[in-house]
Amino acid sequence: MSTLSIKPYFPFCRVRMTRQSVSRIGDLAWIVAEPDARFHPVCHACGIPANGIHSTTRRTLQDLNMGAATVLINCKYRKVHCPHCQGIRVEDLDFFHPYQRVTKRLARYIHDLCKVLTVAEVADHFDLDWKTVKNIDKAFLEEKFGTTDYDNLQILAVDEIAIQKGHRYMTVVLDYQTGRMVWLGKDRKAETLNSFFQGMSQQQKQTLEAIAMDMWDPYIKAVRDQVPHVKIVFDCFHVVQSFNRVIDKVRVSEHKKAEQSQQAVYKGTRYLLLTNKHNIRNPKARAHLKRLLELNETISTVMILKDELKRIWRYRRRGWAQKCLDQWCTLARTVDYPAVHKFADMLERRADGILNHCDFPIHTSKLEGVNNKIKVIKRKAYGFHDDRYFSLKVIQAFSYN
Image 1 (spheres, rainbow, N blue to C red):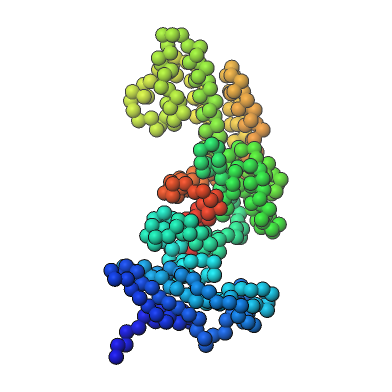
Image 2 (cartoon, rainbow, N blue to C red):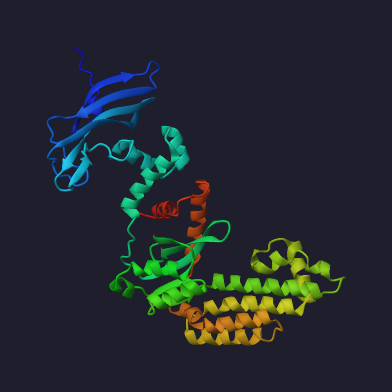
């Protein structure tokens, strides 16, 4: 008598396997299961024993593959009267969720594969619909990362990332000290960041000390409204990036005013003016930039302003940083361009956020690296239609447990 048995491969305590069959070529295994009569049926929602059977039905579930064979379990289950839920509920047979067509262990395996493969690849591997795979993975992510962890936050970095063309953004909040992704929210409005802070208790808000960000007015408004005691720190990268746009306006204007014989010098200089000098390796490009600066005094002045602007972030004493900022604004106003004057006015209005760098020498460069990894996640999946799922996948990618 043969002692071979498939039961050890199906250790589901509330059901018993009654029949099996395998296709002729061995690519499909069909298992029939029924509730074990030794166990009293319980409600899947509350776990309370049922006080009666309403009806019985069957469902086909996909299980983990066995070798090259796809395993399907045709399971009989009962709908029961639950005294606690006061209604008819599906009984809990433990090995599958009543509203899924796969077993729990297959769902766990799908979730594990989704950490390294795309949803489409996992769906193709198991011959499932990609929406089914996404919903399974999303359910596990909601269980683990669905609630924002606000504990032990002291210094944050806030930035936005473009998720689609057409100015669609998400706001990203990072724990600056640990590199942990704390939260993502749709859009880059004040209301977006408000919703992040509103999830915090007053005690958690009081532990915050500083936030690194760019000079985006909605973010500034949200921080001042929700956590006015927190110091806002504007990092050098974003301020210089904003001034680069001013330099480009000056370049375009000077090009238009230049004589016909000199206009060739202006062509192809946009990249040269916006790039840091030490990053220009090509000797011809360096010579081209030198000719332009010798030719045009205004452009030469704004390039000097760009270099001097970076010096403000080198100081660690507020008094010296304030003096450097005042000198910069004075020099900027000698340039006869409204855009340069407007930028100097803006720096004076935002002086506190610039000088706070002396107390908290933080920046958003960590977030720039994070944003690059987020773009890889987005590109790998050819985009995400579900913003919530995308947020959870990003938080998962930066979790360390």
